[in-house]
Length: 111
Image (tube, rainbow, N blue to C red):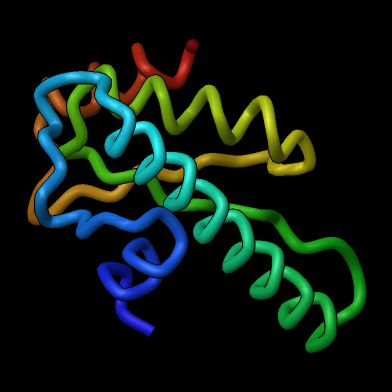
């Protein structure tokens, strides 16, 4: 099911209409929904990996390097608060990592 359909069904609004310039209610609902969906996907993936081989599997949600600092902090905080078993967070960058992007990830990862 597409994200827009799922969010419309769960929260009653279209995520394409969210104003991401402020911490409004739809944005907070969207971030909570995304965090839950990503965590659920990661847990299902972990179970699949664990089923394919013996031993523990690392849980690695991928965070988008293009997020604003505020959005990244919000998602990181929610993952660390609500999904304590997640041991590793990975960042994704489109194209090539720049020194500035690497410094930003390092700074945000220390939250």
